Length: 292
Length: 286
Image (cartoon, rainbow over all chains, first blue to last red; front, side):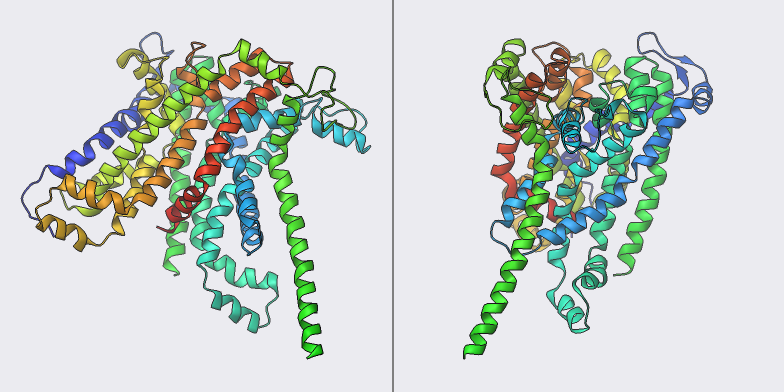
């Protein structure tokens, strides 16, 4: 295809991207590894402490709570997949005005987590809409302190993530559905499948690549959740740290308490979890490809 | 004759009923999706005499007003935030598309030493949550680049994205080699091949990458909130949080602020929606 002699041109094309990623991704990772082994407050120079930070992190109850919350948060992934496929099936029909509906479902995906978070915070406020409706229906007598109830903070944040994500992910599944040959559905109908069976036997296997993709993307996003927690809990992480996730705790340690070395250790652990997770995901993806 | 017409009529009736059912479901889902925004907008135009809390909740304000918007605008420079967000989003997007489109060309269409290594290194950076890099990036911003509290601090780290490089690489790989070789035989250099032959062909992918990057940049919060502090230099999401801090108990004002920030990006989305959806679906197929 091309000559064997050394050519500079490919490297020139790559230079800006590689330089930027080197400075803003690769260097920071190496630096975080170093900081995690030091006592560092960002102001004074780091002091080497070996594995001290890790020992302290593993003895830190809030860290374990944050880790548990982040793992619980991963539950949004299967729920998102099921609901998004459902929505994709619903909008995958030729009806007048269907484009408008599809666009409406996409609104939360472009509105931004801060605006969304604030609007939800207002809905779930003590004086908010939800309490107003529940009281007028007589379901509850006194208003519920939704976001000040430790057991409710994380579920509300997860509900928010799901609500905001369904429209986005369903677009991916819709494209997948439209790629499935019509004949497969006809064959299923001839075999006497009901509508539901048709989707179970034809749509689901046909959507496998999309399911794998959404599983990867949405679970990585769930591990990184921050904005929703920040807004819903008013920057505090919730009463008794009830909404604190890994990234929220990382942020708090690094930029509120200025324990940069300690936060770096949390970052390394988060990186390790993300790596394990990605390897599992890639395995699943590979298996999906192999079957085709 | 009469029976077939009857049958056709019955089928049409059944379809109408089924369609009505689907429209009910679609409308219900749309209502759930849009309601939080709608409620925000309704709250933002409520007058002082309209109750914020009531049982049952008041939907249509009896005394609609724009006072809340005025109050927000006199206390916070929302137009400036808007301008900052535009600058950040346009520069981030433009440079990101350029850098990604450049980097992806050799990865897709040239053979050279180190290609695999560079490719897999880029692939690996995809998994790293950006928040992990914020501690060193913060120190870089303060000590090395001295751009703390400027828009450059938000723009520069967002220029290169491994994800966009991959999308562009996929797009180039769909182009037949013959097209490129023919141009090379005609004496076109790599820059001309890239600029005049490849880029026009991958325009849909460029558009998708651009829109995706624009929306992400427009909504980005955590890193900008670490970098931007002077009250004139905030982007909209950071400004929105500042606003909420100033109007803690004034929900009408917060609602007005949220409405002001959501409307522009929604309008933008309405305009580019077609390309966005096409790009998103193309990205997964590759």
